[in-house]
Length: 535
Ligand code: MFK
Image (cartoon, rainbow, N blue to C red; front, side, top):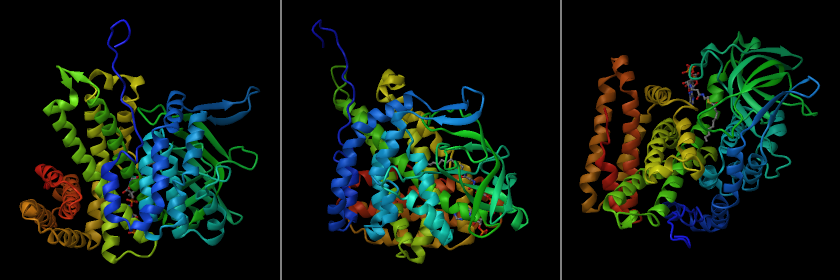
């Protein structure tokens, strides 16, 4: 109430996003060696504070002042300048200072470094106005250079991509999409003409995220490889800051990710260098995609957490029908259901951070590698859809205020909506899951891993739930065998099958945590109340 007795609602407030996250802390305590947790905790606390502090001001500025394309200088010269606001630039500086990319490549925590980086990204992302998008592609570019780049390429570019110095840090875009397609890149018409030890690229790219980056990886038809697709790396600007044979047509007018300068552009003789073997473009860029798909999953979970943090706070200050929202059983139940979705997704995604960390440091078993390959598209498609559903429900927790722009709530939903589209739509990723299962022993590795987790669960209260998970895995294997001779039926069920893999694997992860006593077993029961198999 104010002095005149009028009512004004207090806004939801965010606290330190690490210190207030009991689910994350419980997971880290249960998995990380004590000395690793001790070493990284102060940094997580600092970043958790910034995510609820100075980063929010920067993100609000970036969101309120979207990037601008300036095609000409005052005298008519074509310049194609991309202007971004100071908030956007500051968010990039925070990312560099906080080592959002560097943490994964410095490998100070050996096989735990990737997990550490995932947690940092999880804290950074929902306050970053999507500055995390160029970081995802930068990380993917660093990884593809590590795996396929020759020494000169690695020496020139890796230090920039993993730098902690804002003056040295470079970001990379990832340009796959042309007018003819984003999912099906087989129609790519950009050509790469070999020229004096390098290449020059000619063609038009339809979506180029983060066009303010210094670098980009892209696909083009390679004159040295019978016009098959190869992967190329290009520098956008020359030493004087002028675009390297690139003409920007326009910035895209998007539903969300409005602070992110996504452009449509033409390459007209842009110098480039090939990464990896000629004609292996799709296979090589898949290394980038597998990183960006994991970023997408981490970011999806972090949006769920952000929405819940706001909704929980609000439920303890908003009164309706004579009591706080938090005192209404149905509101509490709604929040509890959302919390379970978030916790399940958190466990799945952090587990992928463990698998990726092992893979990148040579510590992965063959089963780890199969699971990583299988669960990467599974987690991306599953958490992308979950985030949209959870954040949509979160908005409803605020009633009409959830629909009002300057509360900062609608942007969460607008930005979530892209998570199921870019980096492979739900259907394209469901087909990728089939591709993995049809060409490897990943389903066997999956079933064995689930059983290894369930067999440890001795608590009598959990037995029935564990049997439900076992039955789900049997059902999935039966469906997969039964559709072996019917590609159409298999493809038709691919999405349901991928969701089944996500729900049942997550159930096995939650069962282990409940058995070890650091997860409330009610969470597991709630998770398993929804059908685990949809095939
Ligand atoms: C905040 C979050 C941050 C995210 C920010 C990102 C913003 C960036 C915006 C974008 O760039 S969006 C564009 C993203 N584009 C996609 O995700 C493409 C989606 N389409 C696919 O993934 C298709 O499945 C694919 C292009 C791969 C299909 O192409 P093809 O030519 O039909 O591929 P094919 O023949 O199935 O596979 C070629 C090779 O790649 C095969 O290996 P081999 O040559 O050895 O047989 C495949 O096994 C391999 N491959 C394909 N996907 C793979 C993979 N290998 C490993 N991992 C994968 N994911």
